[in-house]
Image 1 (cartoon, one colour):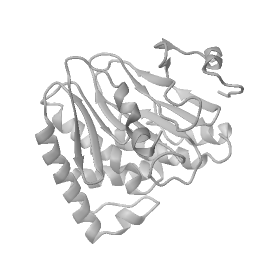
Image 2 (cartoon, helix red, strand yellow):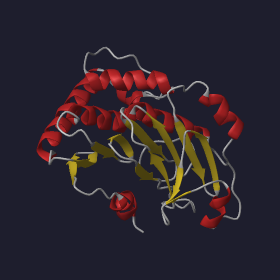
Image 3 (tube, helix red, strand yellow):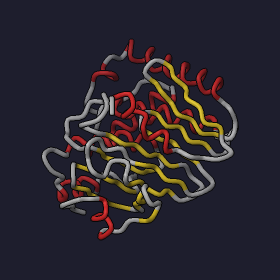
Amino acid sequence: MNEKIKKRFYRSLIQKRNFYKFEVKVEQTDLLVIAKKNLKKEIKEEVIRQREILKDYIEHHPEFLLSFTPVFAESDQEIIKLMSESSFMTKTGPMASVAGAISEIIGKKFLSLSDEIIIENGGDIFAKMNSNFIVGIYAGGSPFSMKIGIKLKKREIPYGVATSSGTVGHSISFGKADAVTVVSSSASFSDGAATYFGNLVKDRIDKELIISELKNFVFIEGIVIIKEKEIFLWGDIELIDLINNDKINKNQLQILGLQEYKI
């Protein structure tokens, strides 16, 4: 499977009837949108506006782009404040949250025009749906890849779901996880947290270290970490077998063809 197909493979699994599904591409930003209305023109205009705000701020504050540690923002612009806050909440640089921040800002802005909406930006998702839905996890060469997903239950507040990888994609990661997927109420915070926990995974998943660090991330509702044949689950996570569309428990993970696994 070539890189282009890998990058968008999971998008073909998104199935929502009676919804519009469309892509919005502006430079490096590449959104998949599922909404009740065709908002492609309006969303593209907003993406352009948000990107201009970000580029203008970076021009005058280059540390916002380059830093791998939290940066205080001297701005009243929502995207700048959100990325700065996320950097402090997740102990990362502001750009670790940029994809999630764009998803979140776009999603919240257009909820008034579509009360159900999914904004996916490179695997980082803002989602507000009036029914349960499933998000698949793409984990590169791991045997778990696109065989498991997370069931997200209907609720009043939106979900923010983000996935970071040290083996897939172009985003900077100092770890070796095939996938770290974080669920919270903020796509921006989930994005930064996925990066942070991805950086902690080296040759194996250090369960004790992960659990210890999770105490400092009170906004995380659930996390899935995948490293080859090893998986770590924490929080309010309901795994789904994407092949049979069934709930997975610990013992059923064996049916995925694993010779060894850890939870």
